[in-house]
Every structure is written in structure tokens, then in C-alpha cells.
Image 1: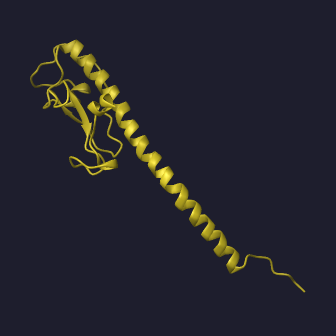
Image 2: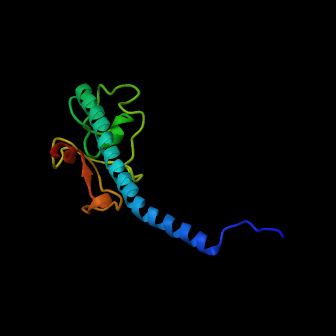
Image 3: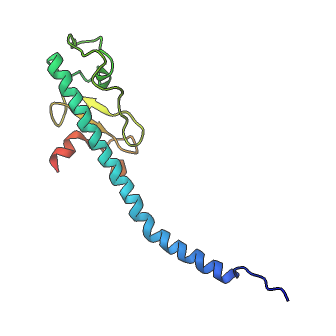
Length: 143
């Protein structure tokens, strides 16, 4: 007699149920870490952009205007205020994007400080909570 090897339907169902339970317990923890990592990336980007802006200010005696934006760190602005001592090659190689793939926003003068660098979060609209919350360089200084 030949013996057939394999799993019964019951055994497969038990494995599927166990995997489902494990995923339901582990997934929220992993997804929460991803959200935290995105927020930490935004704060790291704020610091590097602020450093570049401070170098720009030391060379040109003022920050780029809101109209000139962060692009003034990559290419020399043509509008006022002038950047007479703009560093050849720029202050950043390229502009970072927020963790959701959108450009960072910039205000000078800022509403929360001398300059504001911020993102509107995943939903790209003001306000919100969690991933949709606005994150700015000022929020890093408050906590």
C-alpha cells in the first residue's frame, strides 16, 4: 500500500489562524514604528535645512524670502533680497522631500520663529493628527 503524505485541511486551517493572530498582534506595533520613523526623518531634515539656511544667512546677511523659498539653497535667487555672496554650488545638493514625498514648506519671517520649515503631513492639508499632523521645526524645540 502507498501512503500519501501531506497536510489535512484542518492542519492548514490551524496554521492560517495562528498566522492571522500573530499578524494582528505584530502589525500595529510595526506600523506605529513606521509612523515614528517618518516623523524622526522630518525632524532630521529640518536640522539639515536649518543648517543650510544659517550658512546662507551668514554669507548673505539674511534668510531667503518666503517667495524665494528653499530653492534659494540649491540655485542662486534672482529676486530680492539679493544674495551677493551666494556660495558657488549652493548650500544643499538637492532639496529633501518630506517622508510622504512632498516638498517642505518655508516661511521667512516665520509664524513660530525667525524661520519656519514644515510639512502638512500625509494628508497635505493643515491640521490633523497622527500622520496627518503638521510637523514643523518649531515642534522639535517645544518637546
